[in-house]
Amino acid sequence: MTLLVTGGTGFVMSVVARAWLDRDPKAKAVILDRSGLDAAAEQHFAPVRDRLTVISADILDPKAWSATLDKQGITAIVHGATITPISRGSASEAKRQPEAEDPARIVDVNLMGTVRMLDWARTNPDLKRFIYVSSGSVYRHNGPDWSGEPLPEDGYVAPLTLYGISKFASEMVTNRYADLFGLSAVSVRLASVYGPMDRATESRNFRHVPNRVAHMALAGETIRPNSLEPVGDYVTSTDVAAAILALIDAPG
Image 1 (cartoon, rainbow, N blue to C red):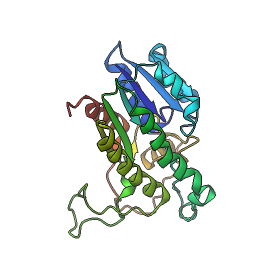
Image 2 (image 1 turned 120 degrees about the vertical axis):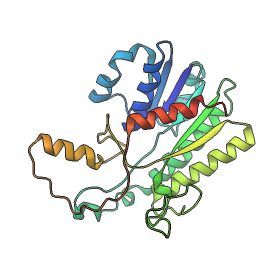
Image 3 (image 1 turned 90 degrees about the vertical axis):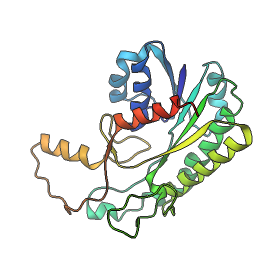
Image 4 (image 1 turned 135 degrees about the horizontal axis):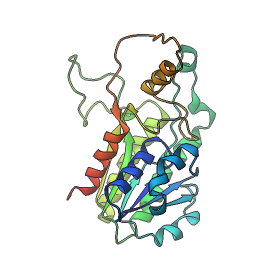
């Protein structure tokens, strides 16, 4: 079994790739990412590096990667390549609109990158499962009318940002490709992930609050939150990886 992870040098996807390799000493993984392995990723993958192939290429340029992927015997895909332009931090930082810096690039990579990967996937007879990694950003900021009610997956979908819009559009494109070409495909929506490999990268310009708080505490800095009101639940990257692997393993 060989897993292709797009965006696999980043935060969550690198944890998914490592979890795949850790659970089976015969398993192999291929990472397709515009960025190569940075120092943190090199250290992260060191124990399993002999079973990992890294292809540094732009998801929007299939000529740069499709021929190489054809030779890898890919049996499952976790498509996580994305640009995540989100302002986090102080009140002044929150007023920034990083989407305005290159809006077309966000839509190109997040939506058309998905189309490019689906186009390759539908021609691969060995493919058993396609996992599209979406985001909680597809939901409206307000949830159910009754306080404390869980947010239903089939409701309150109305993304406001280009990131969320492109994610939701990619979900629908994935569903349509599945119907048209008989792909076994599913989308998974992640939100507020923390844990190993959380760091700023070329395509993701922030670290989540638990990571920042931990580093501040280790540095002996004073932590002054803007509010003590909770804004949502966090999930660890290792739990996310386990869930995604379970989706790959699911019989249908």
